[in-house]
Image 1: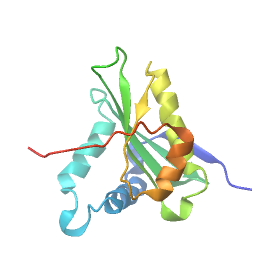
Image 2 (image 1 turned 90 degrees about the horizontal axis):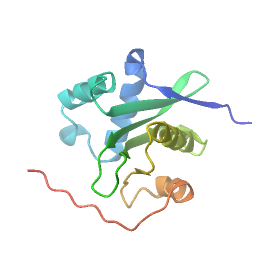
Image 3 (image 1 turned 30 degrees about the vertical axis):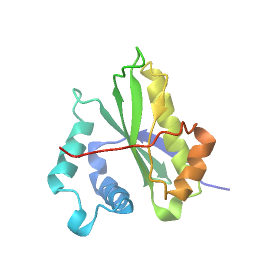
Image 4 (image 1 turned 180 degrees about the horizontal axis):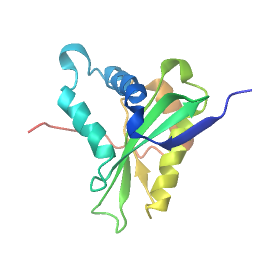
Length: 153
């Protein structure tokens, strides 16, 4: 029998447990070593989670008191909806915790937070090579076929 997963809001006392997950998430997407995020980005991101003016939120998943996953999301306006939309920006679980329902629990917690905020759509993106994540995403959401482009200015 699998231990139960508890999803809760990030606490300021969670920094030491959150940081390795954040670093793991960034490494997964190639942001490590010479391409690592500037430490100021991490500091600013962390502080935004606890600033009531910021629309950025963080949840963590615990199993037996150990934080094994994180998700960060934000609510924003859209030109195609009256109500806010929720962007699930980051989702990560420790490699050894994958396949235990932690990712699904985090996504469902974002769905719940969005619904409580009056939001009707949650969306996210992932790299096409994230086969493990995409197996889960196909079960909990619909892929609309969009391709993402970006350009730093």
